[in-house]
Length: 123
Length: 493
Image (cartoon, rainbow over all chains, first blue to last red):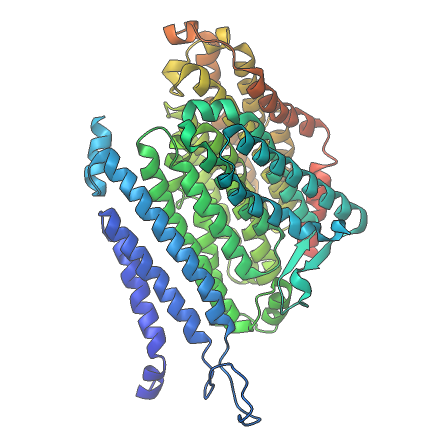
């Protein structure tokens, strides 16, 4: 694998790094807010994956113009459209998660998972 | 005229009704509106099922966009069957709901419960009917997000935490599914399931396909609560309001199993999944471990809801055992078990809701002797428990018998033996509750309790009697399921 193909896959490397970063944060962190941040990073890596796969070599924005050459290639707009939906889902998930955290903090006075579990065991 | 649009109406009607609920401020009005919507949806699903049985599968093109460019809704034996029992349980549980909700949720929040309930139903019906893979993800998230919100409404302070943990696990699962769908789209350039399956057939299993397969499988296994990815389920079911638990426990995991079967059998083909990559072995092993671990855990629970939650994990194992056998009998057994377990577990959780209403507790020690003051509720538990064990003349027997004969025909004697032994574990945890209900001295709270109200007992008995009916009259459940199974297997080359 030469340097060109490595650099050509730059976006995919970023996707993998972000995906693993986010996943690790979700698993390793006990703070509920940080868990949500981890989930967000994890989801964003997938958004990037989708947007990247829509790219066509030499392709322009998928808008037909009079002056364009007959063999003009266009990028695939569908994957961006799909990911718009997934972004909305991600926003809804984050909003719901934050709302739940507010209620957890009201009830327990803490957003650290280990402290909450101790409080639960005592009750 | 309107008849031909039913495939889309069944999803759109509850979807539109949900936000309308928020604008109807009167509590009774909201409830009646949601109830009417649920029964209308059930009616539509029965109509679709009748149409499929009469004239075979058909599809609907959304906005008249031709396949594969537009989104296609497919009504076949499998989807119509699953939709009919999901919407049926949705309607029965909502009929049962008002008294229980009054008791467990602050009345000022009721206008929020019903929209969430309808959205959850929308999502599940959408997963069943859609023929577009990305749509599966969207509907999965609609039903999941609304179920997180519903679970967090529980009275205990642990409910939001349980909902949060479910949210984290569920989002990871859904994102895995999204990655898998993205890779499949990258590979084929289409999202229509039928079209995708044709394109993948020429692909001979590239590495991208394998990675997509792995992501989709793991993602859906989280949603199905397959051992060892089941950790979110017990807390979520225990702390949610009784009505919500009954609805979600009876439907959500089954719909995930449906999506899994659809994707594995229709898109990846059993040949790729089972013969080449050995998914059947993994599923069999994890299902069996899950059945034993969860059933054993159920025996030791002191909380009735948590006991049933663990039993749900075990029952998902039976469904997947059927799916992993990859033959007509096994798959039929798995699909019938989805239906049977939905009515059994739905009925049992409704029984638990009756106890929770009258005794304000579902801990076993608080239920001692409840059969004396609440005889009808306690008897419903006995009937439902027999179904759960799989005693002859109940629905549970039919599906377990099918699974057992399929295992024996295939020569999986070990699997068959383990299934029989695991049913004994179910006897233990069901009997433990029966003993507490019938043969213990009543506690003080139980002495003064009254029988549950008729408005709750009738829907409960509707499902409980259903267990007996479908244990004797099997032409509907087994008949449709076997047609669904042969369609799934016939689609494979």
